[in-house]
Image 1 (cartoon, rainbow, N blue to C red):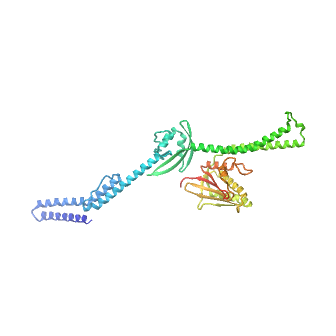
Image 2 (image 1 turned 120 degrees about the vertical axis):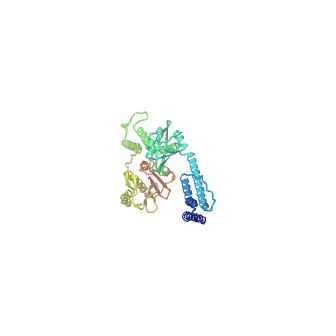
Image 3 (image 1 turned 90 degrees about the vertical axis):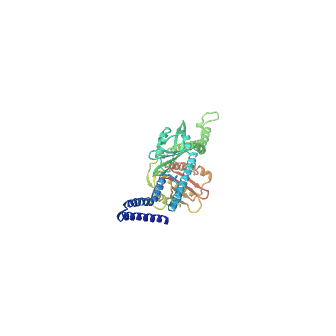
Length: 454
């Protein structure tokens, strides 16, 4: 800094000296030619002074322009006291930018390699113009498309697939059926959204869940067949037995009818047997009808609802009846304002009624203090959770594994479709119904509603 100041002072002094000499030789002596030379030197010193003082500004401007253009090839020699500190700072900053750029490039190539070799088919596209910005090898293999640059290219696979991807909300999950080269495939599609340099991108993951569905389908069929076999045998075996009894009553050994020979007791047995067969047959018809009804869950009529208010109203409605039966019911809402969701309020209310009813019936068998049902509503980043908890006897693992299977029930007069229906309703709302239970520790059902990230 002192060196810079000294250079400035010397140049100013030189300018003043040449200026004074110009005036002296031009006005006070006959050496006017020498005055001209002094004037020339004066002008040159002025330019030299300006050039010297603006040198740092030029270097700084060139350095900043190089940074703007991502040009880090310039180096600055650290010679001369005037520029030594400045050029040292330039070189340090340039080295740091080079390090950051190399680190970014390394991270980019690392992430690109991870994405490219990921077993999950991934795709990212610009939301505005729907141009593909990222696609990995797994996706190309899944769709058998070696290259595509626009989202509309997926129309070659399925036009509905493109529309589904376009309409998916952030954090949404969708199950889609796609026909690829004559093979029907089930895809679980999940979307995320991110903003890079002011541009919205949507990242979409496609999961081929055929093998998982096949395994789950086999397990579901095995469980369903086991339950249905049990229910049908409970009706068919008595019908078969009673039909054999009736046959013995009205037919002789040689096959001849002996209805006219029946006494009063035999006639009474015949009437009772026929009524029992009728009752069992109607029960079997009702069972089959219930199965058909279960497969036809209506489409939700969605509207914006305050879930906190809906649950509070239901608890108020159920409170008196449960209180008369000796069961308390409590609701613990989250703090703050309303908890708004887009749902079918009647269907969700029916699900909650089913769960409260099941909890109440379980508590009838409990001997663990005061029967209690607790409803808790909580908000999380991507979901809203409503729990229905009781302090009843709980369930063992075998019962827990079958609780959502249609027609499975542990109650004498239960139909076994309430929880199955409730789970289907939650799936229709793009949510889920889960259960946790241990013997002697009560049971908790969770209604999970997915929501967009706020």
